[in-house]
Amino acid sequence: MEQQDQARSAGWGITRRCNLSCPHCYSAAWKSSKDELSTDECRQVIDTMPELGVDTIGWTGGEPLIRKDLEELITYAHSLGIDSGITTNGILLTQKRVDSIAKAGVNSFQISLDGSTAERNRDIRGARLKDFEIIINGIKMSLQAGLPVYMAMIVGLATLDDVLPYIDLARELGVTSVRFCGFVPHGSATDEAVRKRLDYSDQPEKLAELVDQLLDIESPKLILDPAHGPLPPSYEFHKCIAGVGTFYISDNGNVYPCTGLLGERFLVDNVRNRPLPEIIRDPKMTEMVSYDRNNIHGHCRECPYFRVCRGACRGAVYAHTGDLDASFPVCLFRASQNLP
Image 1 (cartoon, one colour):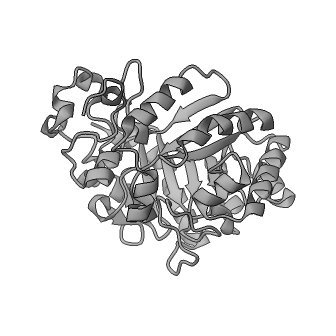
Image 2 (image 1 turned 60 degrees about the horizontal axis):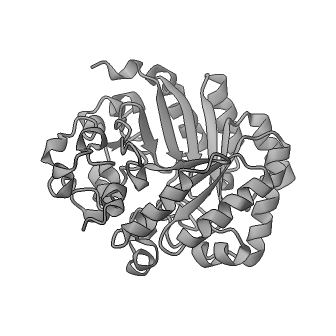
């Protein structure tokens, strides 16, 4: 299979530095980082992307707006025909920064806000009460600047009851797309107290009830990420594109097959050791794409939807269980059928 000719998206955690310390942070962001790639190193990596068919970079963190060269890198990527999206917590969004981002030509702008009120956002993210209004103003300024804004919220046991009010808030602001991020115990979220508060794997019926309500909502557009697994009524899951249609670069240049396949188990190499095109051609990049799902044990093997579900995202399964061959632990179909 000639994989280098396929279009790819690249996730890039451009920094682990962050102005928040969210307990559930997937990337385990820090207040400082000593070994993140320099501007010149980033440019050199971007130079190799056109030959790999990369058409989009999703800039994440940490908090990517902490990087003062972010717009410079976005503009440079754009000069090579590569689009960009940003995921931010929105706290650093002044009018000047919004205008700068819009000028750089960002194609999507995801602003994370984990509650419909200042109190809910504070309780989930550990943010200040005043951060809520700062983020709301950032959303408004971004929309006024013509940026295509998504709002994003973590969905866990402690936030299930705030999902519908959150949708109402998005409508009120004029946001047309909302992304709900499923809880995945990775990074900071492996902490037992965090898992106890957010993990719904022991009570998936509560998530299933919520998803049933969400499927009837036409506006705003609702996006449930892969951590939720296959959705009703078809329970069909997308084909894995890890290492083929996507890959992820960390702040220090580590390369992984996907944003859902992070950690030492899935690390392929570092761009300081080998050029990105060589890393992309490493067989470990496509380990999950070629993974034999017939190895999966447990309830998934007997499921009538296994043909279209294929056991869901192996990255999410591994984060929950530590076993690549385990069944998906937060199955909406089983929850809807009251199966154990």
